[in-house]
Structure formats: structure tokens, C-alpha cells
Image (cartoon, rainbow, N blue to C red):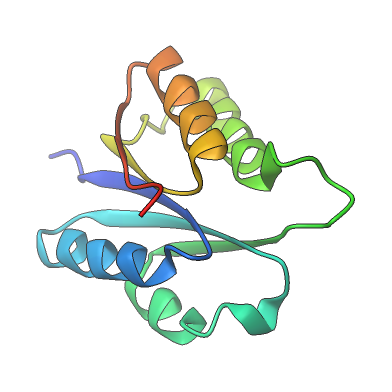
Length: 124
């Protein structure tokens, strides 16, 4: 039986909404890979809850020297590249995106390239 797996990617100011969705997905039996993007580790605030909820958690510190395309895109690209090269790993069922619009659009486009369903929460 295949384990249901999803990726949740979020940046401030959407981390509370992301955590809420992660908790729902976990209750539904999903394995969750979480990516948090923030300027400083201190700004996360919910790190402990994310670590308890996500099966794998990656925290990317967004440097002010990087363009707004952001490290969330780089992290997802790297994950998909590793899956693509693996003979034992399957693509996630879905990707939940909790990012500002430019990053969210780029992440959704990347998910589409791999035929992965993307659900976007952006621009309150």
C-alpha cells in the first residue's frame, strides 16, 4: 500500500495557516515534508509544532541578497530532482503552497511540470 505523501511549503506571513493544514493532513494519515522559509530562524515561532507534525522539516533562511524567487523554489526543485533519480521514491500526491504570489506561482508551475496537484494559499 502506498503511503499518502504531500509537501507543504510556506513563508511568513502564512505559517499559521500552513501549520493548520499540516495538522489536518496528518490527521488524515499523510506523510508530510515541510519547507519553511523565513528571514531569521527566530521569526519562525512555530518551529516546535512543525517539527512535531511534519515527518521531515527543512528550514531555509532567506538571505536579503537573494532575489525574491526564493529558496522555496530551489528546495522543491532539489526534492523533485532526487525523486526523479530514485527507483524507490514516488512523487508526492500534492503540494500545498503558502507563499506570496510570485513565489506561489513559480512553485505551482514547477508542480505542474511533474503532474503534481498544487493547492495555493497566497495574498490574504
